[in-house]
Length: 112
Length: 111
Image (cartoon, rainbow over all chains, first blue to last red; front, side, top):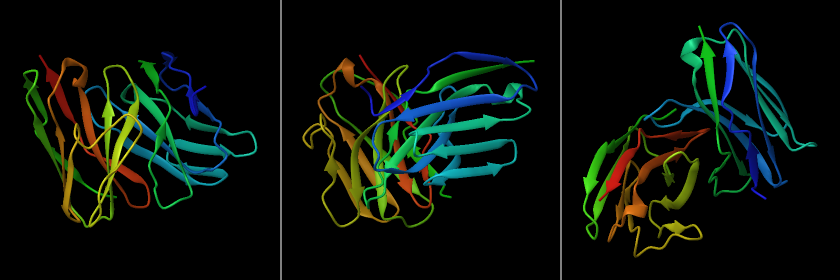
């Protein structure tokens, strides 16, 4: 079993929809949680960064972390065609090492 | 945040040769990482490169194959040695500040 599980999709939604992306993990030592957006042939772009449990909102994006369930989510409101990309969750333990373990990525397609 | 550049952006190399990838950051950072993203796959950590110490390699990656230099707090290189077609991937450097930021990647094709 992988340390981080993420549904690969593809996920296709109409423009304006609310998108929910999720990851589950098995390592209880993970404390830092990140969501990245990756366009084709580009490097990952950091969207959201959270520490421990709770919610964080930034514009149309909301990240949720439920450590008791080992489950994290990214919500995108009022989705746009420009949101079409692969979304990667990533996490690391609360140590000085800070190296990330990634999910496999979910491909999102927002239809105009 | 951090702005990261990589050179080259892409290359096509012959089997058995080596390629050195450069990573430049616009600010001083202690922790730098090198990742690999194979076609259609997610990112896998190759090694952690902290200035002033030897790089730490993940399971499955060895120094002879992927030597890393970290001469100062804004620069690092990764060399892919004695390349084979299985090394065809995107190689990304990353730095840890409050979050973790990635460069644009180097797309390597080995023929």
